[in-house]
Image 1: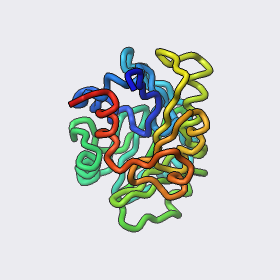
Image 2: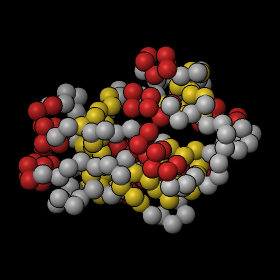
Image 3: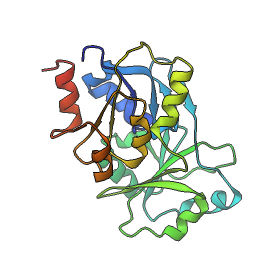
Length: 226
């Protein structure tokens, strides 16, 4: 796969910046990449950040954003904010992002604020508190829950990218890699789809291949890294 190029990911802007610092995999990332599971496009070269989909900021959310969870981090325009030092530490450990990149304290928001995601660490989430977000999509993991705006899908970001010719090169063979339900729409744009090890059973049934190794190891083998 000499021409392998990553054009979409579930990662955040902060995570992509960290990837650029610590990993050789960045050389196979398209300069403009769909991130936040399709809700934004980030340009590595210019640092331009384009939001495609976000939470609707209502008066109710403005008043109650601090009640989303006991321990959480919110991503606003690519900047991370935690509601406590403990939340900052958890986010840093789980996402491998330096604590210095996370601001403690939730800022005042307004209807124009681009809220992209919430990462919540409560053992038992109070879903009544999430009602202030309106409609949303959710991803549950062992140590956290990530909440995205409604209609989150990498497919939406890919449609935007390809319709505006934002991919650095063209190819006749497209590979899609995913692990969750919101990745299934993306598979329609690919010639070959791959599910990572922790994928849901539904995703595994929809793909051509299920990995038996971590994604970074697989990609490094494809690009010939030792």
